[in-house]
Length: 145
Image 1 (cartoon, rainbow, N blue to C red):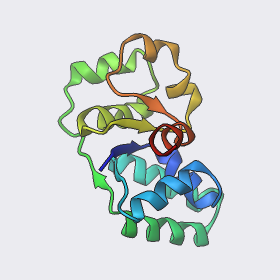
Image 2: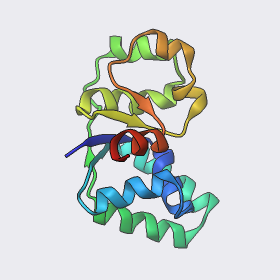
Image 3: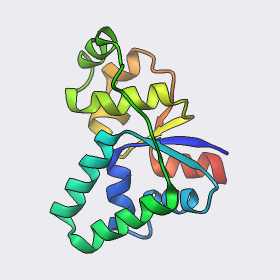
Image 4: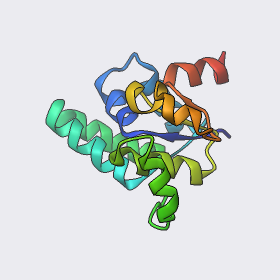
């Protein structure tokens, strides 16, 4: 079963729209077709943004998604300082737990909608990250077409 790492924005998008790739990834996870991994930091960010920008109903849907999908929560507590320092040279500090979690999780891809800090970040791409960083649509197309 494929294991993928989800950024906070995927959880947000999954409850915002029932027609997007993020929603379908969450549905695949709920049905047991894929395994999702994330970090606690991403879940806190997703929860805050869902509550502030979409509201209580969407927050309830988010909790239902989590209960049904049962994501693996990857710890990043023991990420070496030297590793985090290197990542800080190519991305904002707030995104380091996301990338670090994806790298240590053993996931086959990091799925995100963050173009600026991940998908189109030339500095990040140049350091040779050993995990593909892709959009939900790209993952669905490559894996299920």
